[in-house]
Image 1: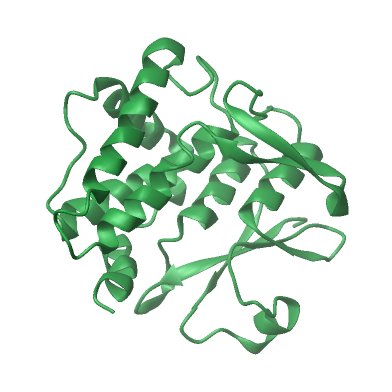
Image 2: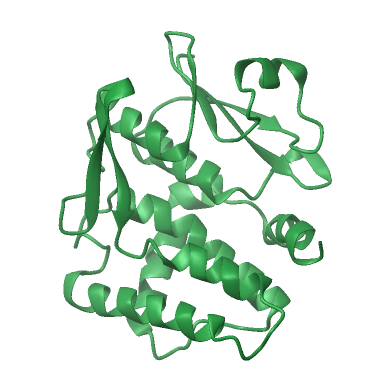
Length: 228
């Protein structure tokens, strides 16, 4: 098999798929492009020696193509996948994604995109110990912006066709749903109808079902940070 990918194993369950949204972004892309691949689960609490030797930073996802070179970073990986497997195209147009060149690999990849601030604002809200610090409002503002975009451009961020931006947002919205629901008792307001429809579309895709971590493993993964 030409493509091999290392992804996070579940916290406390090293034989089960873990909760990394950046890993799922890559496996979603592989599934949507119908690229055959072998998946290796990496226990981040006890990283194997061979993994550290090829990837000293010890981060996932990590991918290897038929040239035998291991490549980290989900941004770089999805750019290479688009170049190597252009059909079906998941390229995001400039209207929804700012694209930059990455000379080392002679590719471009997305650095800024519709909804790109949702995940960092979610993280700040999740980690916040101060209910009055405004992190919940900051997240709501980002979700409202996404809802407005989907209202005019939906159902996906680029209209009728799914693209790389959706591949990035889907796992992050899933983590937002699960983690904030569990740790904060917070849910996305029902008034953001376009965001809810968008999530339903993404979560119902076979690619998403096949690559998602179970909710209990998402909770376990975030518990290590929330309870630290």
